[in-house]
Length: 265
Image (cartoon, rainbow, N blue to C red; front, side, top):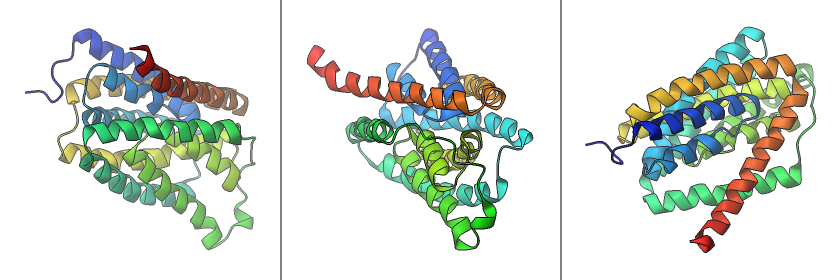
């Protein structure tokens, strides 16, 4: 028996289309989970199964974007790999907490996280380019601490909740690590991938993945991720800023819907 019940062919296609869009947006500015996670919930999957299935499609989708960014030289591998290791740890811990929570509590947690994401982006604003990352001014602990802290922190958040984690990473990398927006987008994908892999392992162990939906959606996410990374590399930072505004708009729309929908029913 399938966990969460039967999902129609049209339902699977809807998830695929939305995940493809999510992959495109996520490769540029993060925040793809704001589109893909609700897509799984819309077709009636339980919150825990929706989260696990979303991790599978997001993980595979991120892989293609990372390959595209890596070939272009946009990823700073020395720092990215430090963040990746800590993101694996944080993602596993976060997902372990997620699968232990009741479904109702997890839904409230997902909804409750959105005001913080939207509020931060609204008051912090869209970041300007920080530069290219000045390695010679950051040595020893100063070099490894930022990616380590960001990897662990975003891993915990991504494993537990998810939506908006990539956007947070981009903002933090510009502000703290002095990356330009394209470099921040590329390196954020590496850390996000690590968090997704670790949390996915936990969801798989707890049988919280619908492969019949997540695998087709993963193909769509990979296509979207490749196109998004290509777009980002071609058009540069100005379009990353614009896409960050789009992500912020989606966050605010989601928040307003969560607040107003119960009163309308």
